[in-house]
Length: 240
Image 1 (cartoon, rainbow, N blue to C red):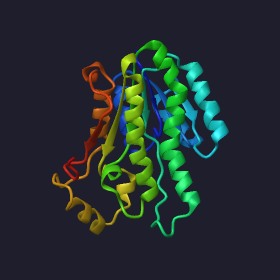
Image 2: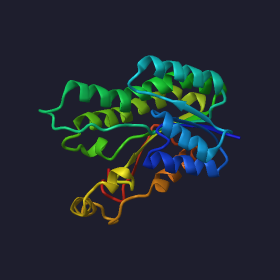
Image 3: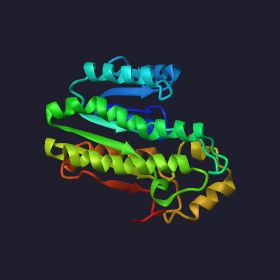
Image 4: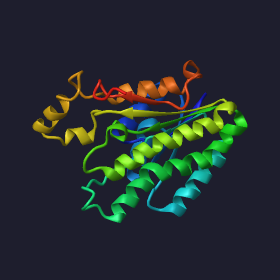
């Protein structure tokens, strides 16, 4: 039975990914920054899986938890770095704290997770690492310079890691979703939704399962010759 780590397991996209791999009988290693959220996941998926609190804002706890995961799951097959935060502001109003917190949660966390968990994959000479970036990493977005910097930084980082580990049978890829139905899109007004939909040729938001399907494909042998790629899933909103 294969084993997968999914960060941000309770979010809109994260929940879709968890459900996909649970149906496929993977052993789940799920993380969240909230103990309460983690308990909800445990109630849903049961005690045959593993659950860890990963707090981006507590570097010591973050590193210790990653070391614990590394020791307890040496047979890890797939890493999905999905967790992230936003703290939006126009550049002239953005505080250094906003910049640092978003870069820490959305970019530096990827470095720490991969650095701690990659050695086991190297020993096993197999594995898949998948990062969830965003369409705005390529297009830019006003008011989100910190988020865009982190998400575009992910793409360059993953490509570099892909080059370093390709000879060890480890695939490293990025998925850049467009607008996916989630608690974030639920908060938009009808006018805001219509403005966004005007930019999407398919005239709809995506579903979390449509991201999860690609994560599942990239984590399996069918995608064994795909690495170092940033794959867009956005209904035609951005074509590159």
